[in-house]
Image 1 (cartoon, chains in turn yellow, purple):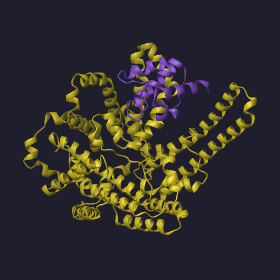
Image 2 (cartoon, rainbow over the protein chains, first blue to last red):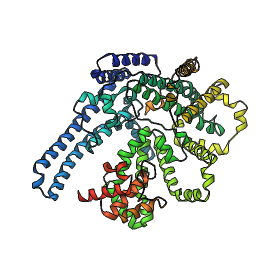
Image 3 (cartoon, chains in turn orange, red):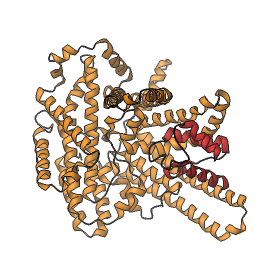
Image 4 (cartoon, each protein chain N blue to C red):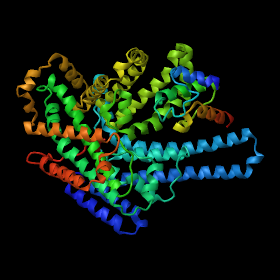
Amino acid sequence: MLFTSYEFLAFLAIVLALYYILPKKTQWAVLLAASYAFYALSGIEYLAFIAVTTITSFAAARLMGRVSDGEKRYLEGRGEELSKEEKKAYKAKKKKRRFLILCLALALNFGILAVLKYTAFAVVNVNSLLHTFGAETTLTVPSLILPLGISFYTFQTMGYLIDVYWAKAEAQKNIFKLALFTSFFPQLIQGPISRFSDLAPQLFGEHKFERKNVTYGLQRILWGYFKKLVIADRVLIAVNAAAESPENFGGVYVFLLIILYSVQIYADFTGGIDITIGIAEAMGIRLAENFNRPFSSRSTKEYWNRWHITMGSWFNDYVFNPVSVCRPMLAISKKSRKWFGKKVGKRIPVYLATVITWFLTGLWHGAGWNFIVWGLLNALVIIVSQELEPLYSRFRKRFPRLCASWGYGAFASIRTFLLMGLIRSLDVYRNVPLTFKMWGSIFTKFNLPELLSGGISALGLGLADYIIIVCGCIIMFAVSSLGKERSVRDRLYNRPVLSWCLCGALFVAVILFGAYSVGYDASQFIYNQF
Amino acid sequence: MDKLLAILNELHEDVDFTAETALIDDGILDSLDIVSIVTEVYSEFDVRIPPEEIVPENFNSAQALWELISRLDEA
């Protein structure tokens, strides 16, 4: 069931009504029933997979909790009889047991994700290798189902398990409550990836009807639909046209495609997240923000602190940090200092962890070389920026006024926007050599007059569409800029007439300019497929 | 503590680590800096900071970091 379907709007209206009409202590049960109904409507066969993740995570967390409780009781009872070394050895033994339980649960759940998502990709590559070495055998490429949102709910639930292992979260004692945390329907298919300590108390708590929450929630949902239906789904037509016939759209079109796809993915993904956060807000639940004006970033590092924030922080906390401070990495660090000297040696573990993290981030996005290369290119840009930092620092000290100027800030933001857009175009062509070839054509076939003399209409959009896209971008930019200090909804809250007029105008725009007239079709959100 | 301040100053020589109390919250230290600090601490003090201790409260000031190192050394 798509967020953009009429069925979903009817479903949401029923859920919201039940949520506030039924007794407050049953609110979490209403959400659980709604979440499972939503998931079943998306594909009844998917339910088994999310149920396995829930049951195994519940069991693993409870077992780890039991080991911790036993440890606490033992040390409280016999703590004074034991020497420091004996206590240390006992704690290490118990930690090892918890670690074993954690590893089994992670292996099972990430194993399911890996088998379903990456088997076909692995088999295709094995076949390709076999042919390269002259073998005549060809393995059959399996066609497996991929449950909707599996990457999101697996990561969110595994984050919870790691938090229990680290004693940052208590093991949930009610399996149905854990099932709700795993399956909460607004965020199930495209995030944001929440932390148990932030989301669970809100999901299981009682929420009274508050006009402000519902108003804010509905306004945000409407804003999300505007971005998705008016802007993203309209730009999609041009992006698809350019991507499907790369031989016809090289040079300047590739440059245009980079800009258009950046607009599309921003409007699509932030629009989807606006709908998600808006639904939760209408229920009195605050989800983590996933974006913070990413296109104003002046560097790649800053961009990744502002774009898909919850995924970035998940990879930082559960991959980058553990990998970079694990014992083998510390041993590498010691050896590399010995071999290459302190200055170079200390960078090696950091950069190695960066490459591993970005490789996995790419793989998380999809089973394809384009995603892996996308991840590795991001790692490369981050590492090169880090290496150039002393140079930038000297430049900033030498020209402080220039670097503080508006113009320099705009230059740095545009540079980051284009660089990230260039790397992101791997996602459009889904073919690494072709993408590199198309990048090359920007420098060899940049024929601007062809584009201006009518070529732009070959992308399937008319002048009216481009006007709507440009106006939509100006509105998004204005709302984003105004919201820097104080959100637009806060500014409008005490001005109901203006607020109603603007919401009405937005609603009319969605109805009139949404890309679902003849020949258009409300498309699935880009991040649903990840 | 002097050894720790030397490690921190080597990363950002323009920051007064004796006075700063919001190194993470103000974005002075990023994730790459933190990993550098953890590996330096392991190298200089033979104390391993586990990933669950990599939280803003432990890295917001040199004093908080020093307390973390002392606590892990004693454990």
